[in-house]
Structures are given as structure tokens and as C-alpha cells.
Length: 144
Image 1: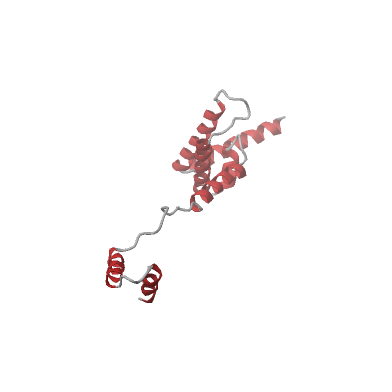
Image 2 (image 1 turned 120 degrees about the vertical axis):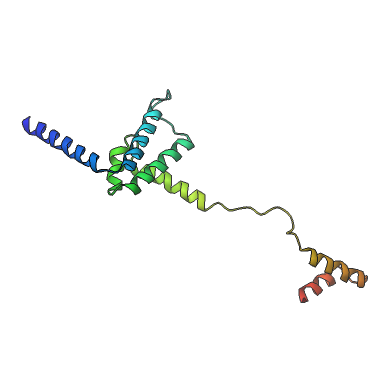
């Protein structure tokens, strides 16, 4: 009994010392992460709470930032994330980054535009050679 009390007192003392030495920015991110989890728990939805995409995004960004700020990132996440495993939240972050960097921009539909110089050349060739068809004009363009 007395040993357990001394162990808890010693753990509290270590927590206080490490809390004083931590950077303010790290503390702020951890507090904000804990508040987001509390806000999710306080919703009136069935348990376990279903997360929206934006809630996952917020938690993932905060968890990644906390793991980068802290010297022992995974350990700090294990202490701060109470509802999900750190691997789960960091997996959300990896999926977010993967989605951002694999987005392909689509080209505009239709034929790509040609320069006005090329258009004038084609029109001049067609006017100078009225018996040439499309294939011949295309072949002349390929030669130039």
C-alpha cells in the first residue's frame, strides 16, 4: 500500500518536472488535441463516435504536429490520444498526404489549341495550293 502511494507520488513528481521543461508550443498542441477529442466525445451520437472527414483531418494534423514537436513523438501521442491508437491517427495523416500528392489534374477536353503562327501557315499553304487536301497539309507540317 505504501509502496503504491510512493510510486504514484514519484510519477506525479516526474510529470510535473517534464511539464515544466516542455516547450509552450508542444503544450498548446497537446491541449488542443485533447480538447478536440473531448468535443467529439460530447456529441450526442452513438458510441463509438463516427468521425467526419474534417474531424479526422484536424486530429491527423494535430497528431502529426505533436509527434514532430516532441522529442519522444510516439510516446507523447500515446499519452495524448485517448480515443484512438496513435497508429490509426497517423494512418489518417498518411492517407491525407497520399491523397494530396496523387491528385492528377485533368486536361481540358477537346483538341489542344495551336499557335496563331501555325494557323496562319496552314491557311497560307491551303490558299496557295487549293488542290492539296488535309493529309497533304498535315504532311507538309510534319516536314517543317
